[in-house]
Length: 85
Picture: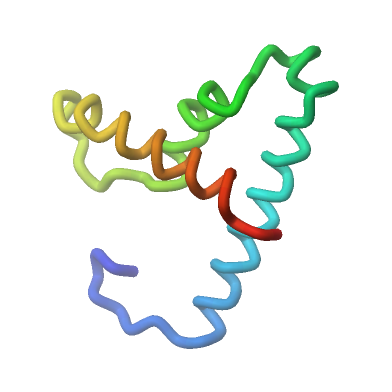
């Protein structure tokens, strides 16, 4: 939507907000110690896996994608850690 400069309406924002809440709730469950013991996926690993999907950098330049990956991972860690669901 941002790429096409479309105006965000309240309903679209609410849908996106609920989707993020649902996803973060799932990821928090996935990060419970009993799950981490089985999956071997700690907070950082989960953030590395989900960050590109959640944030979807619009550029396909591999160098730029690699440069952004740390910031994307850090953002997702903060989102999982701090978002109340």
